Image 1: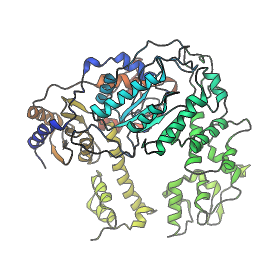
Image 2: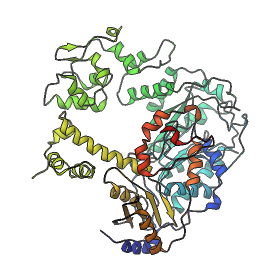
Image 3: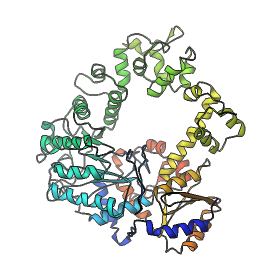
Image 4: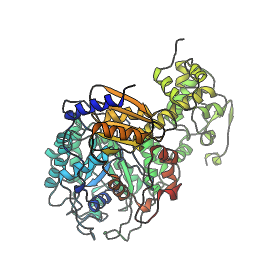
Length: 408
Length: 197
């Protein structure tokens, strides 16, 4: 065990190896600005801070690092993770998106804007307090997207170069941003994203008359994909949909999500149930129930992790193309599993289709049956199977449970 | 005795508050296959104990709050269930090289310092005493208050329309909030986090 004196001596010697610039500048802290610009991003969902970037110690020192699993530092009373300092650079915007309180057509709150130095120091103050894992930077478009992107990138460069910040950074790409700015962002940050918001051009035109869905959004995603292929962006790109702002169906959102994975190489899609905000163009539209986004996440999981095929997944939607507020995996299982399954003989794919069995418990079943026969549900329960849900689809020791209307 | 399980597994098990020498002994005899997948209740219990330790480490890494003393010291409250003080302190010292990290409570504290190539660790008595000693040794200026910045930002992220107290409690159990010394935050509607406990 080392003494405090020795630690203090080493720390004193090492002060010259630190980044040096003073972080704590309390005069710079305008709490009204922090509140207003923070509120501008509260409907942006992405909370992941996982990055596989390797952090290297350099002679000039560093502040921070990233870890592969990511870290969540707090949860708000709505249950969502607060992992990053999520903020707008400015809440002034020339776009006319009807759902957005910062839109030029909305009753906007007071306008605020950070300077790059201000933003960098606030990020570091929160980071060193271990309140956040990094920065999530979005913005309204005050004059034009190039100028705003340039200022956002200047903030990021200050963090990376002057303050040697090695924590997580997620940068929103503004609709219409140039290829050059996207390329610079790919070299500096862990993840970028641009929100598609809707499944198609026609739905976007209902929400915003100023955004070109194909050129401003999809084309920018292709630029990002190109930069990922060249080795940038260790955490890739993501996107986000608003659920229920236009009259799009869940099936349309799901199909667009598949295109995002297959064509744009998006790592993950996020869903935000439309929330009617006073002072916006859609203030009289009904807010959507949160379960709509939960069910879409479940569908995303079934496709991405469980590898369900399209013809199976279609059973989860009703005739109008909407998901119901019940477990989609159960709806699919009722329509596709025709007879009870023996866990001693089923393939991994067959096991994954049973409600109550996930990838971990399916792996456990495959391993266990090499050593012993599975003949009672207690064995499955000890492997993590939710037997209350799985039992209707299983045949154990010759016995099968009947119920769930015999899958009628 | 030759152990079949990875050393790290036994190390994390040893940090659990209820770990005993006989449990460690039993754990060291588990076969790799059993460690991977098991239905034996005793082995399940051992794996659960390790997972509990890992879960607390993961959560404390995120929940512990650090208060700056100048630019050279960061200290914070930590009163974990399991013996993970050193582990969390070391993690934070690697995150903030050339900064003294001190975590602890009114009985015990852990100190760690990473200079970019090697890490040093120490253990001491009450945190307040350790911090006072470090302030004296480092001749540092006063503490910096950033809690109000955090509270302002934290509440800016909250959507009243999405309020879900059950989900919040599930993700931020009170015992971990207490272990990390997370204070009650007040919002402008005068509702406090105590309302959710």
